[in-house]
Length: 386
Image 1 (cartoon, rainbow, N blue to C red):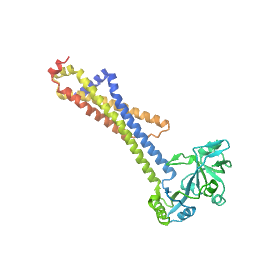
Image 2 (cartoon, rainbow, N blue to C red):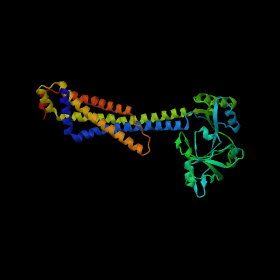
Image 3 (cartoon, rainbow, N blue to C red):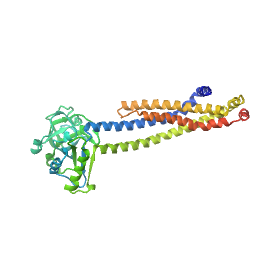
Image 4 (spheres, helix red, strand yellow):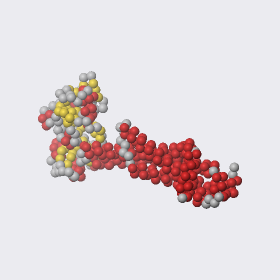
């Protein structure tokens, strides 16, 4: 019964000072909504990357050679290793991609062979893949991404048309399905040409990157070990001259970076919660000063210290909980708005639960001192105040 009466008295006091209560709650709203939005965007980004990685096939392994290079005969040797599935070379080529009157700066040319699409889980929207015949005949043909097709030709229906890479003409024989960017690969901006086209582009026939996929499911570790053993054993490279990583390795590294950045931003946003808690304490101290005579009258009529303590603590708690509820609503609303604008946002109900707990803790922690101070007043001291 006393708790119900304390709650009613607290609500009445809050209602009499609406503007002051709203300003007190503002810091809580900003802090809690910021935490929800930042954590939601961080988790949404991680989930989006993970989904795209799965779409590309999470079992791909990449080998990067830094201080040396491989030849096409090394690719043939790697394909003969036990447990090795598809293997594809890769080498970036400089130079602008142009068509008559059009050019694109965002697209890049990459040299590989007919195994590239299978190894990287890319699919054709139209046309055909590169073939061994293209490589053997040194044909100047290419498979391009959707964005490259639209930038240069204004349409994906561009089979048989010619584009130039560093001034060298290539005939389009295939267009890839749109897939977007994931872990450094943007297939939409790709122009894939046969490995045999390197001399015509003025490039050396050296390979710095190899992509591989295991023959059997769950064979990622074996594929990584096979690549490592070949590069360190057959090629005699030291560990600082190359790196062998799986998509899971890259995903874990990306997740760790995102989590670190999210925690840092959440820590900054949490400062506003501390400031808001100080604001709650300040307002409650002012409230105690304004209602000193009221406290004296209640004590003179028989109110106990615990009754006064409960009343002011309840008031601080209600202000914090109302601010927390408003902050959660604002955070979810801003998160939905961010999602509608194309940002990855995933509502984390664990964070919402933490926000409720934080609001309660702030109300109790920063309301206890003003409530204790009010309960310590004697009736004579309180009634003497003007």
